[in-house]
Length: 202
Image (cartoon, rainbow, N blue to C red; front, side):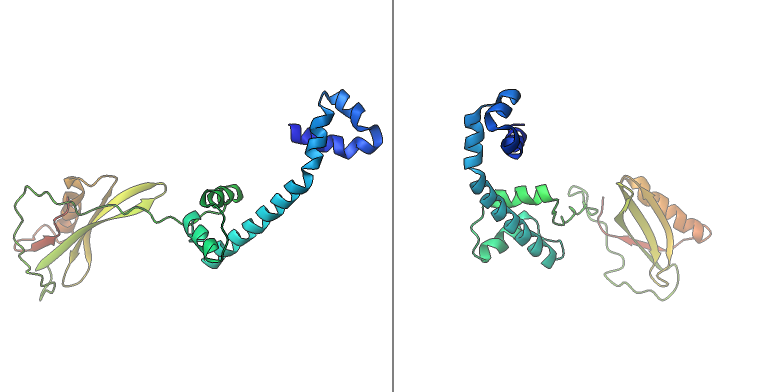
């Protein structure tokens, strides 16, 4: 508010006089004069800040928007600029310059260490001579709107065809059971002798 007041006094001082305006606005003349005395220093600071923002934008654009405050600051230091890292972060927030953040990966393989491992019946041989000899399955995750969902699939190793799938916002056993039931239904219910291989996921 004081800044706007001093700007108003300066803009109308020639027409009405500093004393009269200050009295009408109930602000001190000494404050106005101190504000005017620091005008050049403020202008120089603003000019330096504008130059720094231009440098930040240039580095950000050069690296396709990937760099955040830490990397932008490191680049500036590499060019000999001794600017403070927190100042770089503040200016980037103020100007809406945001680096890309890698999403935290969701773990879909969380083995239970207390359960003995299931025998590997395929022995790392992911080939099959006929259909319905070997199936494999896995869980991944996809973003649906603003929500993460888990996707379980069952694939025939011979044809690479997705036989069954299931999607849910959780990673409980039912997710995989539903995918397996869909695969069994796709094969008419007769899946005797099929080997189903999966990692030691949750």
